[in-house]
Length: 212
Image (cartoon, rainbow, N blue to C red; front, top):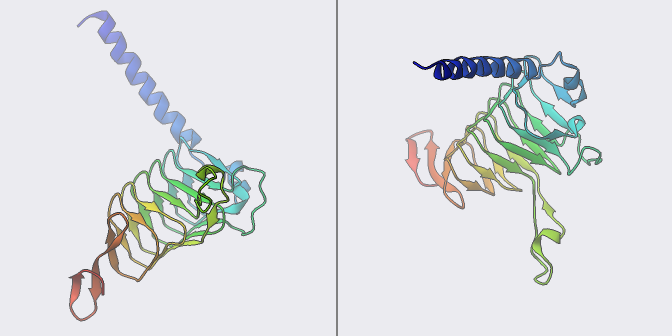
């Protein structure tokens, strides 16, 4: 083995160990000073490093024992100085796991219950562009806002998009890649674009295909 290859392997191993150490140190826990900027930062909760964009922390609530994965974006409003109408604007319950690269972007009200888990790259927002004026560019029109609520015990698969006005019941499963809007009952499986009920639970017959 050449000296150059040996040195490359040694240096690569050193860089990886150092990066793991830096990520451990940069993980935010409840005893860190920056955790005090949040509306609530729960006991044994953690923001894993590297963190995504996070601002307006005073409107963000993270429940006890909740784990926020790497590169997750958590924001309220469009900048860190904006005064919001609801406090907290984004509320994540206890014992949740938010997958890496996910975005939770609140403007009005986003509420996640307890024991919720998401796959990576899930997008949740309570605001969307409007297109009422056909002569005005969509991006410049006044956005619309509707509260979002996700019931306790739910699982959102990878790349799920939760749109404004969504209200999911408890223990809901959302298939990967689904785009969800609307109100859905407890104990259903959602999938598709737009998402529909693929399965529902009957106390007398168990899991059945389609909506109740």
